[in-house]
Image 1 (tube, rainbow, N blue to C red):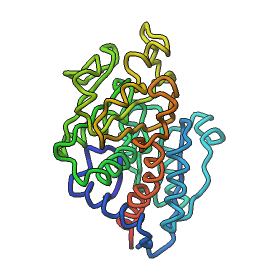
Image 2: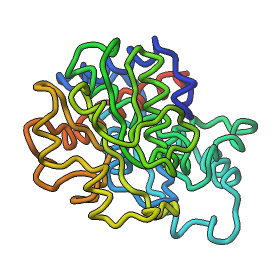
Image 3: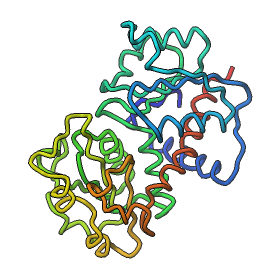
Image 4: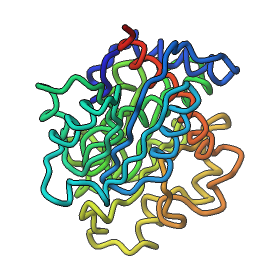
Length: 294
């Protein structure tokens, strides 16, 4: 794997290879990198989990992380993303991890750029590393994807996580169902507007954050009203299957997508997802940098 731009570009075989390697890292396996690589993280949108997780993963596999602060870069002077990445390539970067508000920003980097590009989220487009850590979380729980019922709940039209996860999970054999207000279904078809057909058959309930920064208004809902109709309440959690789990890519709007008391309940894998993200990103970074050997 030379780049990671969209989960659609990652084959099923590559997905399972990454999951296997992440599992080895979780068990304490050492990195297979043989030389010092330079990586820069270009985050043009706010991030806690993804940015810190990538930086931790890069250091754990032996790469050197070169500081980059988007708020103090020449992009503020009008420099294009292409020119920024090309500059870092010529300085000596082996890979750049980029989060950007523009959908498919990486298209302008397909020609003329030789540094490896890892997409850490593009607008409302794709979030492949989050998708892979979600797959890792589910696979650790069930040991398979075939036949697993995954219900994704919330603002799917603005969610790069929903788009990446739904594509990969469906391809791997899971049954993906979407629960959302009709105004938020975007390109998803055959969505549900209530929990009744989904709650007691779901193996995974994956909640999504309401994304105010992407102009996702409540469309007539109050926060309390959204929670009552689409949120995971304590009453709904009690009706879930015995071995079903709760997931959320975070950050969480407590009391909106999920009752605060459920965030760290026995079913919840929300903070486990954060931990799993380090191992997955170690596997991603190692795989891509190994391609640059020699």
